[in-house]
Image 1 (cartoon, protein in one colour):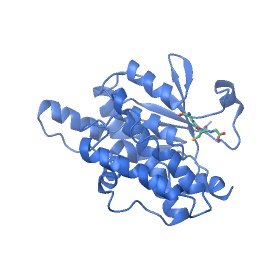
Image 2 (tube, rainbow, N blue to C red):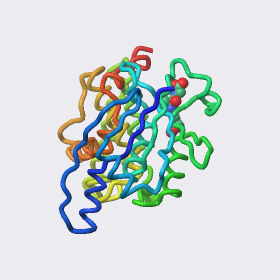
Image 3 (spheres, rainbow, N blue to C red):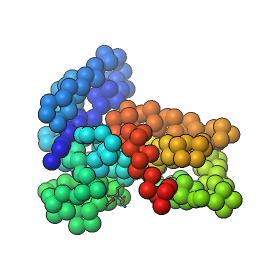
Image 4 (cartoon, helix red, strand yellow):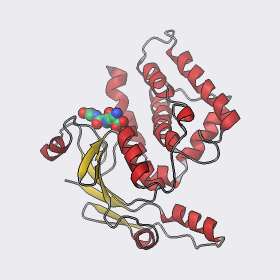
Length: 268
Ligand SMILES: N[C@@H](CCC(=O)N[C@@H](CS)C(=O)NCC(=O)O)C(=O)O
């Protein structure tokens, strides 16, 4: 079983400390070294464990393994949503890579549905990103990431419209327009209520939508030479801002995995 231990960004934690204390902290080096299959961000680890950990043992998370590169995180947007939540909450985690094309017995024993993400909480394996993120919010409420119920489904129709357009082989079947309509609704929402779904602070709905927009950008760019029109400037700024968060950079899939991951759906 291949595992990678991660301690979330001390840099973003340093930001919140700085914010609280009104002092300037030196920027920490993000040195990565590898020992067997375990990666450490050495200076971060020391800093985060001493300052932030409400956990002394990293949370175990089963994640999709890359299909293009050994020992790398794969292209599951639901898994990234969970990892983003852990990163934003400064919780250390330990990724267990699962080859979804050849699921190992140990995984099938703990995941009867055979799906990732899966996280171990209170000695129990918990499936499904909806349930996992809710459980993390209850168990680790700081910083709060809850999106108010009336805003929780904002942007949620974009992903199915993207998948329909990506799979479509008929340019006149209306799937492109349906996606554009949904993106326009979201653009108008952000203009009024942004920059994030719940206003000024990132929340759970953004951590769910961000990975899906990342897939949309890469897959439609590659397979249809398509990109979001510049006129949807609020959506474009939103994506730029989510994709440049340290939590996102630490948990994003490789571009080539996103492309390969969608290939069967595009070809099928
Ligand atoms: N509703 C689930 C969906 C999880 C899901 O579909 N995961 C995919 C990978 S992105 C999976 O494990 N598929 C199993 C397979 O490919 O055999 C969630 O939100 O966690």
